[in-house]
Length: 140
Image (cartoon, rainbow, N blue to C red; front, side):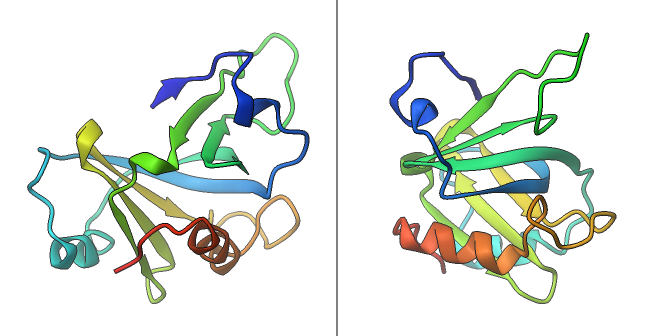
């Protein structure tokens, strides 16, 4: 999780490749301890998920609390550079994508929020999976 600088190239791109609300959970791990087989079991673990608005621009996944800036509320934008993702899994049964970012000591779990209907602001997880595969994220 890194704060976004206002002049970053990917952030300044006019239109995201894909955007919408996702539920995100972070799981701290020691670098080099999570195997491909272990990644496939991660989505069965209980975890607390928070909802963020995500945008995929260039090779970066940006996220913030709200789609639009709300009056008197901070809407800080964070980023995840996808070149830092070692590999990922997509568990269709659990409808969860897990991104392995062990070099930064965490895994990122993404789900479509159950309380949101599938709309242009809350796309199916299959669309996110396809967009990430197009960027050559290695799924195991």
